[in-house]
Amino acid sequence: MTMTGNWNYPTQMIFGAGTIQKLPETCKGLGMSKPLLITDEGLKDAPIVMNTLALMDKAGMSAGLFTGVKGNPTGENVDDGVKAYHDGGYDGVIAFGGGSGIDAAKAIALMVGQDRPLWDFEDVGDNWTHVNVEGMAPVVAVPTTAGTGSEVGRASVITNAQTHEKKIIFHANMLPAVVIADPELTIGLPAPLTAATGVDALVHAFEAFCAPGYHPMADGIAMEAMRLIKHNLITAYNDGANIEARANMLVASTMGATAFQKGLGGVHALAHPLGGVFDKHHGLLNAILMPYVMLRNRDAIAARMDLLARVLDLPVVTSGFDAVYNWVIELRSALNIPHTLAALEIPLEKCAEIGEMAVNDPSAGGNPVALSAADYAAICHAAILGETGDVKVAA
Image 1 (cartoon, rainbow, N blue to C red):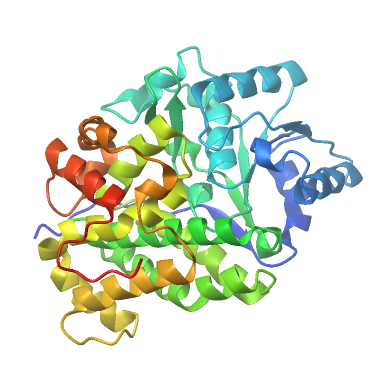
Image 2 (image 1 turned 60 degrees about the horizontal axis):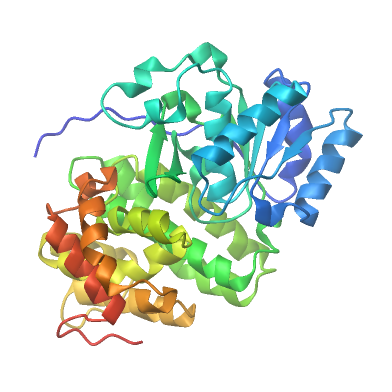
């Protein structure tokens, strides 16, 4: 094993219940006088958005509002946000919401100062070097879900509506300057979204932990994120007002996204095209796909699962892999996560196409074993039918 690596870790974070009150002074500290709050259409009239705008207004720093962001944000959403930014004469961005809103907001903050199209900055080769860094808008990120961890990411996942492909737009300076992580903002998150986003955070940490390469800092953060999720996700799901569970999940989400700088894997390689083609919730896709990809990777991750089972204090009867796998199945069942992609009306006849898209997804490079398009198609097929070989799975 080569013990080398180029490592970067996240940004300034203001964490704790009630820390949203620090938003006006944080914006001012970044030189903003007229920020644009960007979120997804699902939060358009939500109290947490209205209260935040009122907070800014009370501080003498009125913020604009842009909510034209889909659950899977598109290039057109970004273009519309850039137009709103320029038309309103704004000078900074508040990236507010779940992964969709924050991803779109980061892409908008990037694009307000560029003269190239969005897709020129896809995370391929040296595309990032073409960014006009001076033209980028400063960003304060305010997560309202505990899932994607986009608030500590240097990229945005944006759907090309013409090709139905999810593209990763990247530049190091897309990392928000400051994160305000207030668990009180997550209390109103409905139970199904708490479940889907929570398992999304788990998948981020799990795939980072299993990704090949030497990165003990990422591995340590990933394991602690999974431990926090084990002890808090079901509580947050069953008792959405439990501020301690909500706080721990918000930290775990951020930790998962911090860890996956090491890499992701086959779950994301499949979830990205499935989300792009069928416009389904990313976290829910990850939650459904996770055990099927685990089974395909079993031989390559067995030793890692022995360690993870000990960290999670799981009962080991046969192997660490079986212990972790059974815990994942039991967790999904407790959260009422569907067991198959058929529950999302994903058709079998699309598996070959999805397999071709998955093998070309950037996340595929982090899978513990190299999988072909046929391999990905087979996993998709199994996940639609609920086929897990000789492993007993709780439906």
